[in-house]
Image (tube, rainbow, N blue to C red; front, side, top):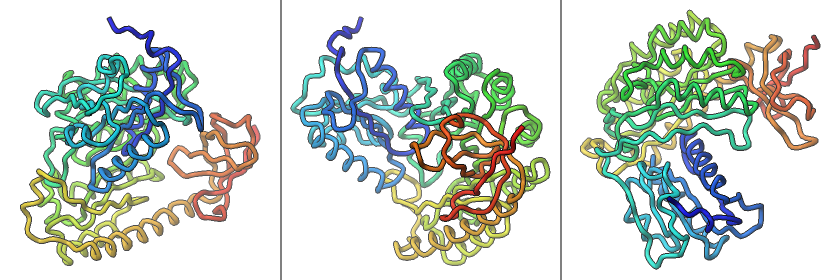
Length: 440
């Protein structure tokens, strides 16, 4: 039995780096500490506990984690410092040696943080507790909102894919997931708390069911029936796991939005092979065409990595031309970062930092064109927008069903409301379409 009396009236600050899944998990950690009597420190207030949830997808991510720890320990001297997340799992000893760090928790331990906090006494040397990748089996549930309009529901964790450039399987372990009935209950709870939109998060959510014998389409159908939740978004799904059945269901579903996020990583089949991806450009193009046929106005975001080992000038041009000619809405561009222990390091051809930057800029420019064209095609159309909270006096923003950002004058009554609007011209900085409310 954990003695929670020592946590009464304690304060904590939380800092998250990386993906939506990390933000969801940090929120859950915050709830656990809150239930034990810990409140979130106010702005300018010194905290007793610091929790840093780290990312390690690139070398820069590791650096940002270290910088965040140094900054927070200076801002909150004497605080008990807990570090968790992917960086903590991959390099627990290294993280434990960072000045000020008291406790390092791996992927299997973060969901049971109370078990390891002890009496919150500062340690001369940080203690690292983690589980080897092959033994990581726990699925820690998480459904969070924080200060956002939408909730993030963690449905899956870990990955069985061993792409040559990626350390995520080492950081998060094998693919595992929650049970559909439990996830449906979490969605019901989100609805009871006033949530209208849920984003499904995970590492490889299309692989859902690996540990429960269920399928992702079964989960989608079950969640679609939850009363009160009016919108779901699928955060990211591998093209080879995005079945035609899923696309067809989203096209006619009650609450799943016409919005997909699909990692491509490269538009060159040669590079995809070097990456050890499980599809080629022909399959990816088929999925995009299927979405376009079934849901013509769908927003399609795509992840692309530039500068991987083996990406020659010729291969990059192949990739660029493929992305240019396939109908997608937006590109999320990442520069390849060398990660220790990955198979990509065996590939001899190395892309220079200058080439990576130049290629990244070309793809970002292409993305701007595609997003602008998508928005422009919707000017004058009606849409349903879920409005998000804004500071008093500022303009408000929200997203249409197909993820177009809409802008309206401030009105506190619109917060977390779904309203019908007519989409107008671009706002001043071209980041949204100005909208006008259509009165009933």
